[in-house]
Image (cartoon, rainbow, N blue to C red; front, side):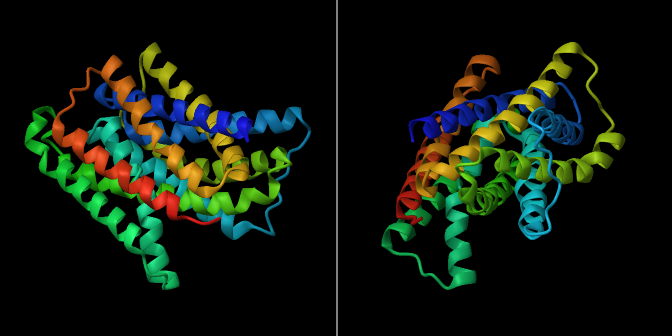
Length: 294
């Protein structure tokens, strides 16, 4: 349990660096299509080298190809695409706040696809999340440096929450049976990342503004090795050992880590619209998470 929590915190800390690093590259003019596609290949290489060293390479997926394909398309490729595009228009803190709406999307899916009606606390969580989004959207005028594409960034941020919710749920269901054999989790991640890498290759080839300075390439490789490789590895290990509600609550910490890094390194300016909106969304995420069952 303690080791699982440690792995979860490491993943969250690494993802807290991801937003500011991606935003830095966006502000430098690096094509975000190149960034998100390069991350996949570097992350795949991390998993491949580890499994090669352990002599545990296994590309068979006949028994779970639907899960691998869905997680690849929606949870990794889709999530990373909309996340990096959102960073063009918004700081990482904004995007991470919206990504933490993922537990709320599970509520909607449960209602529309499984006819599970939300209880009073879950309805309250939906209300808090709506108020949080409303505050962030209405605070546009308080961020003069973000006027261009502000609402487009909000929409992309909401899509990150939807796709990451799908990733956490489906990958969590898949890896739990392998919680005592971590090598199977890494094999699963390698397959997911190879598919995502292949899908991202056209973006890698045809992107217009590639990195051209040492610091830009440094952050590309840092994001590929640590945020794509190690962070996903640690996160999936935590998903395999911890209850879904605990993992969802812990994910709220990414807002804190991302905000601290952007204040320190990108001179992010906060205002009460963002702070209050974030608090509403954090409360909504917490209420939703404590309602979940295994």
